[in-house]
Length: 299
Image (tube, rainbow, N blue to C red; front, side, top):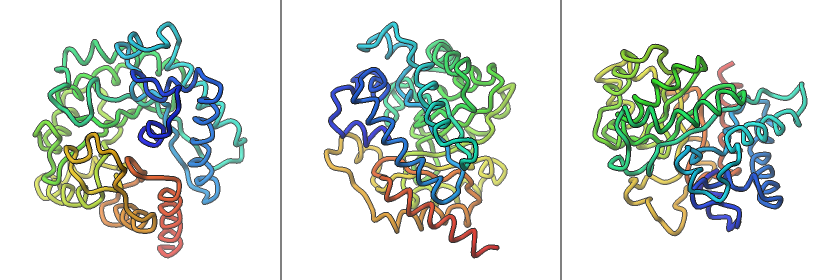
C-alpha cells in the first residue's frame, strides 16, 4: 500500500507521515478509500478474512510533529477511517480485522537508524497509546530492522493488553538486518516481555528469501520458527540494499506470486499471507484464488 500510494503522485502524500496525510485532503482521502476497497473487495469475493491496516506506518510522534498536519489526531482519525470502511461492507461480510500499524522510527532498511530499547519505549509510546485508545483489533509493527528497537516496542505494546504482531525484515540467512538471528530475537522478546507477541511475521522480502531463512531457522530452533505465522511478501528477490531507492518496481507475475505465497501455508503453516513492495490487487487476487483452490483440494 505504501509503495503504491507513494508512487501514485498524490500531492497529499506527506513527506513525513506518508499516506496518513491523504486523510486530510478530499481527493487524497477518496484515493485512499478506493485503494483499500480494491483489496478488501478481493476478500469479500473469495470469502476470506482480511486484515486492513491503518495508514499510520510513519505516524509516530516525531514524524507528526514535523508534518503539515501537526495538531491533528492522526492515529485516531486513521482508525475511524478504517472502521467506517469496514462498516460499509455490512454485518454479513467476510471478517475484516483492523490492525493498528506502526513502523520503525527510522528507515526500515537501515538498522543503524534504529533507537536502542530504552529510547524506543519513549519514542513509540505516544503513537501506540493513541491507536490503542482508538479501538483497533490488534497491533501490527512492520518492517523492523533492529531487534533492540523491537524489544522496546514490545514492552510498550504489552502494556496495552491488546494482541500484537512484530514483523521483521530478514535476510536469506535467517538474520534480521541488524545481524541478529531471528530465532534468538524471538526467544529474547518472548522471555523478557510480560505479554509476548501473539505471533511474529516477516515482511518486505521475497518468498524465496523467506523459505531459505525459515528452513535455516527451523533447523536451529523449531519452537521459535513456529512462532512465525505471517508474511507480507515482496514481488522481488532483490536485497534491501538493491531495492532501496529503486526507481522502477521490480515485480513478478501475479500467478507466480499467488502460487509462491500460498505454498508457504502448505509448506510451513504460515497463516497470514499478504503482499508488500511490488504487489498489486492482481497479485492479491491471484493469492486469494490459490488459497481457495488449495482449501477446496484439501477438503
